[in-house]
Image 1 (cartoon, rainbow, N blue to C red):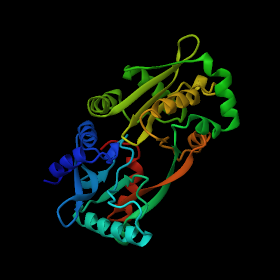
Image 2 (cartoon, rainbow, N blue to C red):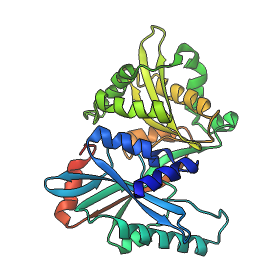
Image 3 (cartoon, rainbow, N blue to C red):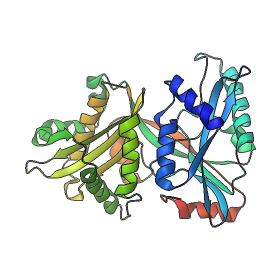
Length: 321
């Protein structure tokens, strides 16, 4: 019943973020051979005013809820009926909703999610025994103003784009395999195995092609070699740098930065905000920081039944379940 109502709600609300869309949750659940469900908070007349989707899995005999690979943000999403509420009124509204949603969740042995950056009040979660860690991404606002955005780039990045940008060719593609290969190279640079297969990515890509908006863009050198690739998705308000790949042999060529600037300009025709989906890896964070975006915190919320189960969260990092 909850999922049915949520599906209807999603078709009537254009503010619902991409990563909270039921069709996206369906695709992730299918790719991971598990299930998802949702807790809903309603007004007195039964109207849905907030949602907390979550995944359900079984690992080592434990009921767990972890976000699958490439799930990006999830957590609590609240539909605010008023934009200019007093701070106290808005906070009280949030607190009541969060308490309501918490009461509906199953009793998981372990739960962990990256919450959407718009969620900024985890006090009720703290009182309910949840833990919080702050992570950061980078946002560009007002991307329709290309001149202002470009002027915010680091000076050496602006210079490189002007000097060598013309030496590359950039184009859209539907060749998912070609993107996957260049994406895999970036993981090898970090000395890590890519945490998803091409088959896994194909299932998500099919859903995005059929229901959403996704863009695969590749940049090639003068010899027609692919040197970087970007996989970008968007909803009605924000474009997200879901995946990015660079040939390590060309990491000093500025090809990835030139590609992202091209993507940002393309996305400005549809939305006004770009989320780099920043990393807590120092080198990756510095890479995104060069674009001059604002550093945006978001919460990683977790809860476990005991400290030993909490330790197990490290075992599930970047893993499917």
